[in-house]
Amino acid sequence: IFFRIYTMVQLKVKWGGKLYDVDVDVNQPVDVFKAQLQSLTGVPVDRQKISGLKGGMLKDDADLSSMGLKDGQKCMMMGTAEAPPEAPKEKPKFIEDMTSEEKAKEYLPSGLQNLGNTCYLNSALQTMRIVPELWQDLKETNIAGDTPEQQTTAALKVLNAQMNGTPETVAPNFFVQLFRQNYPQFAQQGEGGAFSQQDAEEAWTQILSAVAQTLTKDDTNTVEQLFAGELTVDMKCAEKDDEPAETRVERFRSLKCHINNQSSTLEMGLTESMSEKLTKNSPSLGREAVYLKESKLQKLPEYLAVHLVRFYYKADVKKKAKVVRPISFPMTLDLYTLCSEANKKALEKGRSILAGRRDEEVEKRRKAKQGAGASSSTEMEVDEEDEEKKAKRKEEDEYLSTSGNKSAWYELCGIITHKGRDADGGHYVAWVKHKGEWLLFDDAKVEIVREEKVKEVYGGAADNHLAYLLLYRSRKPASEGGAVCGPP
Image (cartoon, rainbow, N blue to C red; front, side, top):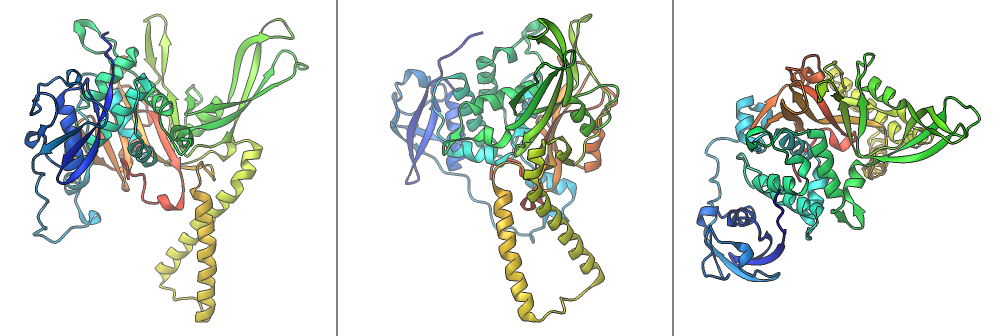
């Protein structure tokens, strides 16, 4: 594998009376630089004329790395942006009045081109894009440096800008090339030199790991703030009662749901995964012994990733085989029973607030259905009550809006599924909740699907799509409309 030195310089590009700071990777083709300018200015690539750099007018086949570019260097771009859209000739139609075909045409996010067994990466990226806080921090942070993690995060930022700048399918050439270069395990090739299929959960984990080592805003690590939780782990020797138990705290960015013959629901699989038997050296016995490992959730993350462990290594065929047993998962997940006693106590306030809001909504709908009028109290009493409610609601909203999950309730917002019999083949797609609708991202193809269709990925047959990674987000009053795809 050939590794290149990755160098970023920040150019100051003048256009339309404004000066734009553009982070440029000098090892990438000119087209990548122009694509960044298009996302900033709206000037199409084929209309751009760039001058002020070595060699006169910048040519499409120029080698940026040989031009001696330096931070702060100025250049000028000429070209007209695409004309703003004309005022609609027809009366605007609201989303709830649109057909599925009209919705698909009007507001669907862009898909990603499959560059040769890259569906695993496309599905991980599309699922990750429903975390707006991550992309907002990435957008507002200048990423510089030449470590693999910094390179990967910078490339992710460029790709996101490309996807936000067009409703059309995007070819993630820059990101894929750099990802394979920095992490050779994803650059394996099979017969004929074609790149091999990889594991989507491993790609998800690797991308988050890279961003976690790079993206810090206001002295806060964005990935840790959004995805990290904590477990209290008690380890007790099952063969010697008087051996002191070992207690420690473990951090996690995803929970594993192991699947066995008794598992049928996500909650059951998670519960069983929290209680394990394992073998390790016993200091009191001086030999290997059986230990009981009990885990409880001590701190809940804002976004919870759950890895359904469907692949295991089969020694006789030397491949990862697939577990196709159906595992149902809820649209709303409650992890309260898996929490430590201390955490349960801390969650009481948040659970009480959300339960009260739910009861208020039920009562409001009941009254609306019955056509009930306002309260019989005087107008002054109603006003005072409204003011008290507003103040209380504001305090509750502020409490719920702080980082981390305050109730142990989560709502499903993303799924990565796999179709096929083993991890080294098959096909991955992403399902995400976008503005109240479920969308299916199948590489370049993006379509709206019914919630009933989402529930068909529970499992049962290798030739059907089976849920492999689930993404839940904290359930809050402000999130009633579902997750937002892409940055705000």
